[in-house]
Length: 396
Image (cartoon, rainbow, N blue to C red; front, side, top):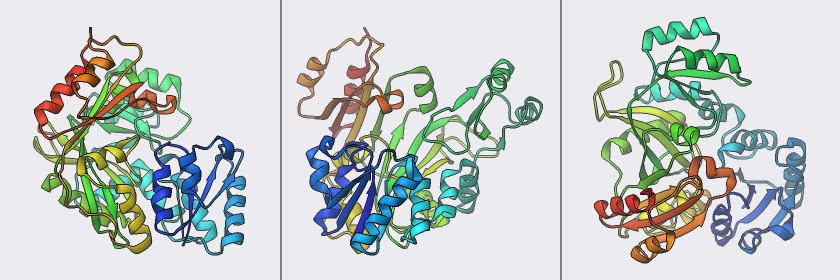
């Protein structure tokens, strides 16, 4: 099997996908913009061959790299980056080279926030009302219907980037005066906790592995206001999340992918959407959850999701991983450089040395959303996890 992996060196934990594929006797062919001699040794070891381009943004360059590998190794079986930023380019390359997997028109459905809503509806999941942002007068008519606040976000975008809460007329007027270069949508505001259904599905859209994460109510505020971030991987997947998430995968006809589906769990009744505790659609992301979340899932579920992914791509079933292991809560707690905290890292590490799995600086590329310095720790007890989180984030 020949598998092209786009950007194997970034994010820095993604070489693990390549490593497990190679362990399954796959030719793993990397394309990236990092010079070969600057690659981490783990990345080098995980690849059969590497093709360096000047820029991954340059489609012609990447196209030539794929053509070179195709000429040298024969038919390319799969091409992926598992990265939201490159999903459309991945799909265009699969389309141009007739490689197995979602083609460009398919990917538009799950990278466009407006298109996502139609598939959520198909799965029977309520969605927030929305409209495309046009002009001040038309947007005001929508707000008259749904009320303030509303949320505006790029129709195609990554995470909470360039997403804003419009609280009043002055905010709306400022949004229009500043202008927007991409197409924006405006949604009614949902009061709820963000929860996810993550995992890996086979070629028939069946879930072979899954987990659940719980996030703060507003990642948007964390990014825009540079706030602390903490979220956790749950020990179990709630039944309603599993049932709804499985239907969404079928509705999108997603095959052989790592997925990250986001929902709101309402914290108060919302007319037209449901009662407190009900599930409402947020976004579909047909790639692994961001940052070090795949590693958190491994710690929480006592598994190797990178190997599960490799097994599904190679065999369409799990062959090299047992799912029968103890399960834990795994929490991510991140600090901001601009803030002063009550406890230093040494105090935290000393108290929780048996629990902490990672303590690092976050890459500047992700720091806006993920914080500057982070801890990842796992716990059997929910309250102990909460105490750890409090200690990490408590201010002076």
